[in-house]
Each structure stands twice: as structure tokens, then as C-alpha cells.
Image (cartoon, rainbow, N blue to C red; front, top):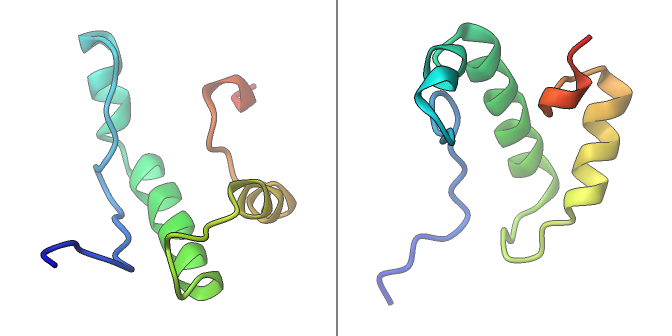
Length: 73
């Protein structure tokens, strides 16, 4: 098979719905957050087909990591 398994991406690896958001996604905090999430995923899940998103979000919440726009105050 040519499938890539157990690979996680960090940095500017997200998409946006409109051009207004493009500049925001190019910033260091976005790269930092995706890096933290990718590292956490790699540490917790040796098989990325069995990721528990709620578990990952719970850990990110405990760390105070912002990963949704509605979390920005």
C-alpha cells in the first residue's frame, strides 16, 4: 500500500474558508498550536487510525491551549 500512516503535520498545515483569515493562520501561535497537537498525538497514539479527539482536546484544555476561534477572548 502507498498509504502514509502515523504521520502528523505541524506548522501552516490548516485551511481557511476565506481570504480574510489567511494572514491570521500564518502566524506563530498557529504553528505553535499545531506543533503541540502533533507532538501530543504522536506521544499518545502509535496508531493514528485510533485517535480519540475528545481525549486530545481534554488534554489541550488542561494545558490552556487555544485551538478554536470561539476560545479567543
